[in-house]
Length: 318
Picture 1 (cartoon, rainbow, N blue to C red):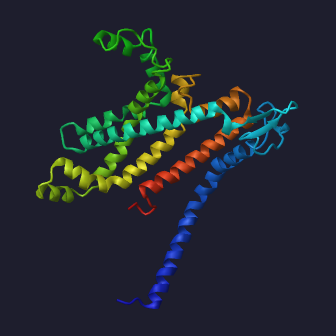
Picture 2: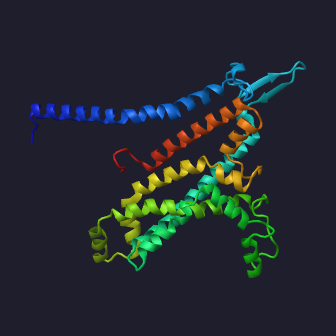
Picture 3: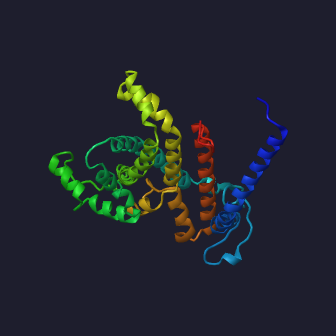
């Protein structure tokens, strides 16, 4: 069937009009976003190329890439390589953050899927259970961190008391202070708190699935596992990928939970904690700005990579 040229021009004009209207409605939000986020980000990037100090920002001098990587030649002829990209503490923070993000997001996605499937089933009191499951997520992170800090205390924490009485451990453990258990403690608290968030997003996707498709699969003789793997999961995959991206971005910039639970612990220090220490505690404002800039670039790169791997498009994904 052919399309009349006048109809094609009319459709093209309508598309352009809708695009203009969309940009018009988005303009106030973009202006506010540029003022609230774009300008501070630009200033942070600028400071990373200076020698700015928090005590006197006006006395800054342009140093180029010296905060990222620099080569210092001493009078004796010795060459010293310095900068953020050569800082082992920074790379330790990068490794801690990536490890935390991978483990936490993986566990939260799997557990969130299980919880969402349970909550999607019909059973008595489902509404009460749905509300109760969100309580850990609703508690502010600082409150959750302090609560778990007391529970994991090596002297009078209830976790040690229960495990010792059950015979699981033979002595009390300093969960948040020991180098062997500090990261595990942070992961446990984060998974406990954020799994309801993943479950909520996945449950919303499950609620949108047409019941007829599931019924047809059952009539064809598919068992529950086949229905989930071949029908349910492919249909909710775009929503799951969106949830994973959101959660991964949040995990990669983790700060408050680690800062409260394991302060001054090199084995759990994240990129955000590293940047904050240099910005305000060590009075190395330019160096901290460089760390913040690299953190932003890493987040942007991993976001694009995740979208690419998940083949998620703006029109809903394929």
